[in-house]
Length: 450
Image (cartoon, rainbow, N blue to C red; front, side, top):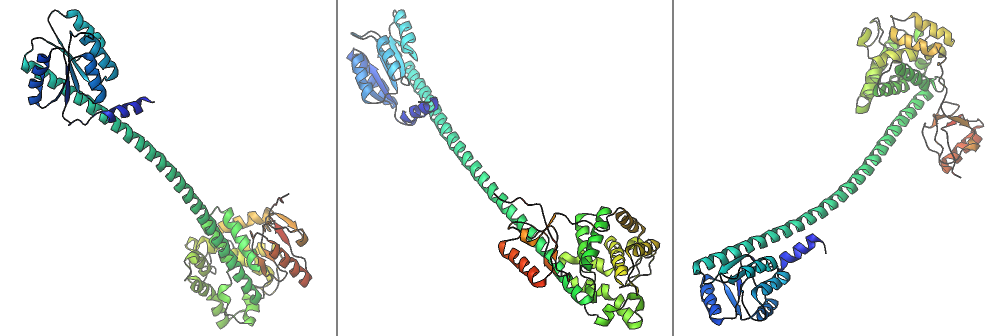
């Protein structure tokens, strides 16, 4: 048994502190026992008497006793021997010795073996004896209360330890739950962002179907604008707004007639030119209800502004123009010049580049022109797609697209990052078979499961 458990058991075995104290008087002289009984009972004590040490031990075995008063000189078993046995068997019982003046050695034996609290000489003074008994019992009560409080403290500490362990376990479990919920929320948010961009790409493809541009024109503009923004070290949110603005740069032209869409910008005059100049503001109005596209809407509104202040619709000058609009204007013109949307003939890439460089500081921001020139001159005019190109027959479930899967007509079939499953792979293969054209399929590095 541990020390703490033994202390608790001992404290629980003791009678309550406020119980009537029990005093056992042991003496071979009946008159002494009677005197002690008459003295102690009126003081509020329960008094038991025994005429020998053996009788006293028998009483102790039957009931608890708080204090023992034993005579020294008794036949068969003297007080020192009796008190020594009491000390061994009932150590928490207070022990007092009655003795004569000449019993010095007996007193020493009782002190050493019986560990008595006090000794009282015969004849005793009643008040002194009562005072000694009272002080002895008070001391025992204090020790008993101390043991009780120690046992209570031990139990409470063990309960607190158990509660702390349970609390730690609950905290760990709740932490794991919150981490799982957070990871699920992050994954859901990433999925929403991916779906959002995919939706924008679908809308962009729908605009191209009517605009007469070459397939993939909006994606080319958006990609160039994004790379210029990255070269200028803009933050992630600005880069995304610029990329989306590139995809939707023709959104305001949705109400144009087919003839107007097919007419180069330099051939527009009068009302047609005025209507064309309003398309950025119309694009902004269409996107205004979407809180997440407010930045993109501001870029689209300012895409026809000029660095020298001669643009539309607000006549902004220089750095008053949003940086995204300054980038978008260059990217749109670079590809429009090559596709005949600005002038009556299709320019070569180097001719389009030359016109843009000549307009630096007039139509375009010189810093944006410099970034564009570094990208083009560095061989980055067309960024190589990431991942590995594969045939449709090489597709396996679990592969993720490294770039958008686009049809020959420019329609986006699947967005980048889409994870292929068996049903989608079959649809891609069926599309190729029916169209008679091989798709350019780029997937991220993939390790098949053995």
